[in-house]
Amino acid sequence: MEIPMGTQGCFSKSLLLSASILVLWMLQGSQAALYIQKIPEQPQKNQDLLLSVQGVPDTFQDFNWYLGEETYGGTRLFTYIPGIQRPQRDGSAMGQRDIVGFPNGSMLLRRAQPTDSGTYQVAITINSEWTMKAKTEVQVAEKNKELPSTHLPTNAGILAATIIGSLAAGALLISCIAYLLVTRNWRGQSHRMATTEKPELGPAHDAGDNNIYEVMPSPVLLVSPISDTRSINPARVSPVPSLSPEANQDLLNPDPAPYCQLVPTS
Image (cartoon, rainbow, N blue to C red; front, side, top):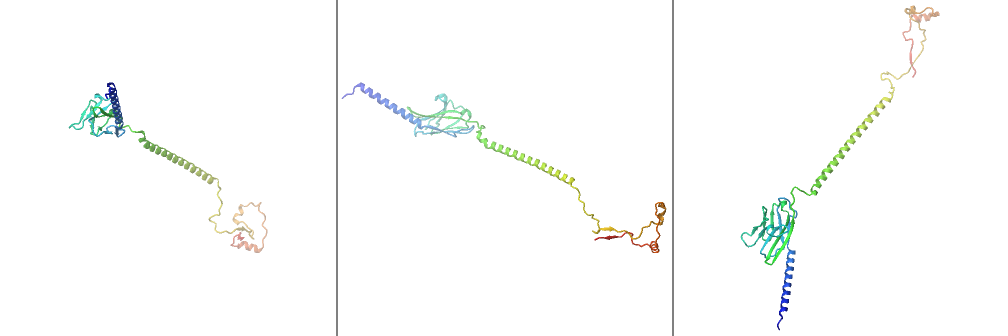
């Protein structure tokens, strides 16, 4: 039984279409499995950056690295061909960059600069009809630009120390002022009390004893001496009464005792 020619043509086209779809599906699955890991994730200026390729098959022909959104000769950094003596061949976009390729598809960018920021792509050629691709974004930051969070603890500590120091100084100043006011008020009250109080009369320190004396009249009539008779006015002197002989004898021989005698009452 012979198959018509038209039927053979349709079968061949269907088989070719199925194979093409299968190849495309395999390519998409291969691209999904290939990815680039950045080490470190946020590179700084003058820091080495490793772009490690993950998911590379065991055998491949070569791989090419590109810097940019497009993959052509003007954006190619280098080509690495395993199995030859000098496997790495630099491209047009290499310039003055120091880049080293590795047999597993990874690359090392030494002393990265902010101008090296951009989109990095790798294309691994498995055969003439199968190429795996992956890309990643790289942003090289300035080294002197630090995150605000790194300064937060220092600034917070300085601020706290400033506040505590100000409060301590204010408390010390208020304490000094209060002490001066209280001391001044106390001294004023002491001075007023000292001036308003009357001194108390106490006993004399030179008193010889504690006896109380009273004056007793003398039993003998007091007569002025003869030397003082001239100074007395005769008109005012009353006549002296006559005295008995005993009285005259007493006047001639006066008692050596005082005319007044102090007698203690207790």
